[in-house]
Image (cartoon, rainbow, N blue to C red; front, side, top):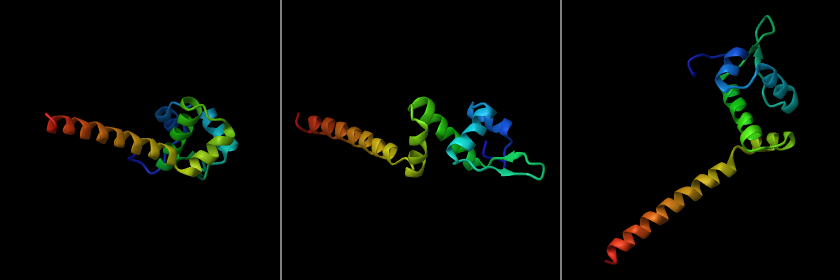
Length: 106
């Protein structure tokens, strides 16, 4: 979906599976989404806005964040997820090393 410069609220809604009224609410509530407006006052969302809406949706619906925590989490930039990814990678490396050690000790 990264082929256009701007997307309508309907396109964003279809892509993110978030109703337009919810997207508008999040704009007002969290003050994180700032779409441009065309000469007629219609919202024009960038691809970055689209990804931000997906992130907010994930935080609210999947991770059960409250409104106050969303702004902090977005500004934090996903440091917690990076830490989880590093831990997962380290666990995989540990398992591989253990299996190599097992082979060597035979």
